[in-house]
Image 1 (cartoon, rainbow, N blue to C red):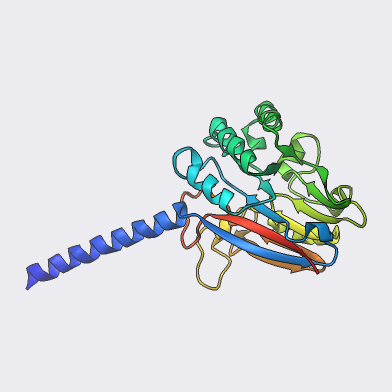
Image 2: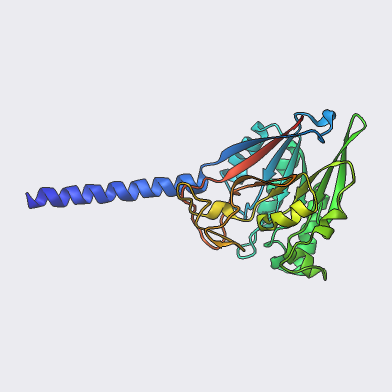
Length: 284
């Protein structure tokens, strides 16, 4: 009888380990697409049905050989543009070639627009300048503290971008803050503005600047997601963070937070699959 109990304990332990391993693999390598629909009367009719695929917090993670799994799924979303909202590389294990390889292939799917996260500037100011220069050579439109007008049938949609405060600090700007007037300068009165930035914790500033739509990442989905919570921990928000995944509305501003794709300081995701976010715009 004792031998039977020991064997049952061994079998149970193996099942727990296998289940735990499968859960970790699902939480870290099983890609998913999360779609959001945003309806607003200010969206020009020419952009009704416009699709934005968001890539955030890749952190040099590779899904399949040469990131082919990620690229195939990205292509299936049929985006009009691709928004890269920071942390394409990881400053602790930077692999620029892997990042450039992904971007090169992503550009074949749709035009890419990029803003810096907190990791890119931390690779070093000279290294970052080389990194940004190479992105531009690949055709990526870099929107750090800049904007770009998309035009269809003589109607305009404004894409604006705010570099992470770490990026801004490198160039003598702000540090660890985000101010509404920095964003106001990037908006065009009367145009619907989509703001690309890295950090979700500045929702109040985005709302004060009256930006219509904000795409962010950085929070990694709260890393470990318990039922009915926004996750256990997020950078710059600490334990039990407020903004980690999904859609948040404050005044006239809608913010969408991507759970991102990779990991950095904490190497595992639990109940928190890496995701591509797709936002489809609709005129009210």
